[in-house]
Image (cartoon, rainbow, N blue to C red; front, top):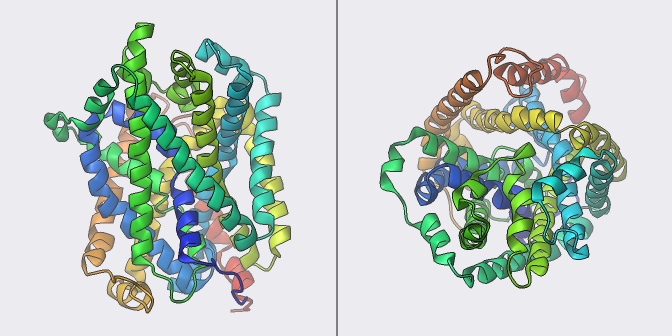
Amino acid sequence: MEQKEYFSSRWALLLAALGMAIGTGNIWRFPRIVAQNGGAVFLIPWVIFLFLWSIPLLITELSIGKSTRLGPVGAFGKLIGKKYCWMGGFVGFCTMAIMFYYSVVMGWCVKYFFAAIAGDLNNINGLEFWNKFSAGQFQPILFHFIAISIGAIILFKGVVKGLERANKILIPSLVALIIIGALRALTLDGAASGLNFLFNPEWKQLLNHQVWLNALTQSAWSTGAGWGLLLTYGVYMKKREDIVLNSFITGFGNNSASLLVGIMIFPAVFALAPQMNVVAEEIISEVGPANTGMAFIWIPVLFSKFSGGQFFTAIFFLALSFAALSSLLAMIEMVTRILMDIGLSRQKSIVMVWFTGFLLGIPSAISLSFFGNQDWAWGIGLMVSGFLFASAVKIYGAKNFREKIINQLGNDINIGKWYEIVIKYIIPIEFAVLIIWWFWQSISWSKNWWNPFDTYSLGTCLFQWLIVIIVFLIFNKKIYRKIFRTDN
């Protein structure tokens, strides 16, 4: 199928890429992970892994998408041969599974934004409000439906008419909202303590292996490296559009957004926590139901303690909603692209993704246990996806990939040989260490680590991954024939 739709400009591509990367992981996950892993010292390995995992994989994805003009499933088959479609299938399914419950998270954000506007979050008990909302099945399903519907409607008309126009509003607005929140937080008495926690490292913590491992995890999840999302956007790049510089800007833009969020959250929490006789570090690092602690339980309570609190609570949840939507759009478009590759029209594909996304997101909307299981299994699965991208480059030939696919006409800068070293050696080592560590954690956390039906276990990850891999292996040839319209 001939590619007929392209991003209208580099600016449009960058906004889409930044929207893909900057999501709820920057706002409700980053502060918590920083607090749990030594504060400022966490930022050092976090930046290192930007170069040793995330940016190389972003470059890989964008190059494959631009070169093959296919979604993840077809892209792997076209790049390294028909027997490898299953690898792209795993990447695509992993991100699609995340999309099902990510839409639920966006629904939470929208609910809290409207609640903030109405004043329902003023002087509340954060945990009671959350429990009342999440316990009622109707509202979580309703707001999940609203979230997935907004995404489907925006993308129904395509990348240029839908995605581009949405991101031109979402991303500048998101950045502006975060900056406003950061400036307000810095004016609070006691804000300096939060900045000190964020930027004054305790150097001995660098010897803690968990700080390094969590830094790699956060970098990979937050930038979207290995998700197949930037690959999808690469399909819509113009022939002479830059690969390397755009990937670097995406990575740096994502990390800059995270730091801005940190400047907004940490000073506010450290300034306001003493008024409530609680420890700031405990607020930030608290996980809460379905990892909701800081964002959905404490922020409404904290912000209500200063003048204009209702306004800034609304700003926070509007920013969180925008961040969730920009990432959800990328997920919906990736699944849509896969369906378009097998011959469906955009409109039919979007309707299928909308209906399936809503239906299969309902279990996560009504059960936090199911939500946690899917987040556990497919969140860790993203590490496998990143490894599969590195493996694809190695199978193709890292040197050939760099010289023939990455370093093309139109690049402002070309990538050096360091890329080959990272892809061939460093990323596989990182993957092995990370997976072993996660498995060890799973075993130590649960006596039922082997149980595939336990919410958080090694068994549930392996069970779900193997089912997906086996299914795609069985139908590998059929999928290839469908995408490439061949009998071979």
